[in-house]
Length: 193
Image (cartoon, rainbow, N blue to C red; front, side, top):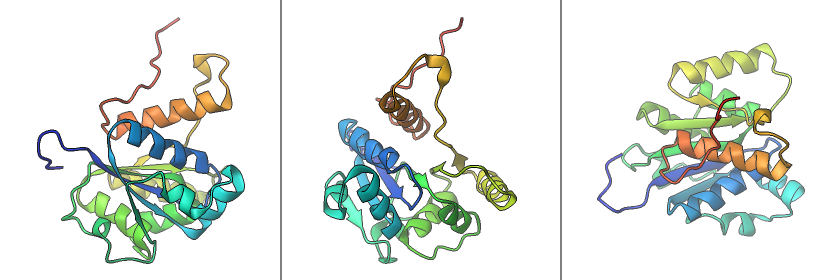
């Protein structure tokens, strides 16, 4: 990404309809703390899950981002490779969204923005949320990986000790921020036995 010195890293955060809306919300919060310029695109199912799991309506969710985009607005800035961004993360990423990204469907702004990240060779992190995986899920993850995307199921690092759910979420989010190249990311490093 070409940025002027001192400008904020620009990141796209997608929230799709899988369980785990807390990951997208926490990423938005941490990106704000880190001084990033955030562009949010949340699918209708993503907003529904944020409401069900966290009690947030669309306006509260959008209030966490610097810029919000309607998933139907295929003409938004983030739909073009000429709009420079540092990285994109879809948190959580449903299997439907994964499939659309893996096959280049670009059927809405969320999947188009992911397609842009891949074609421009920018960081794309998919926090996939589903278990167990079927063969289609695994093949779609392989497709995205072969195109340069990063598949990041938010699995807890039990080696860090007895963590609360909140601490586990925070650790996954910090690891994703580190993958995205955010300088203030603070993942807990393994220090050995």
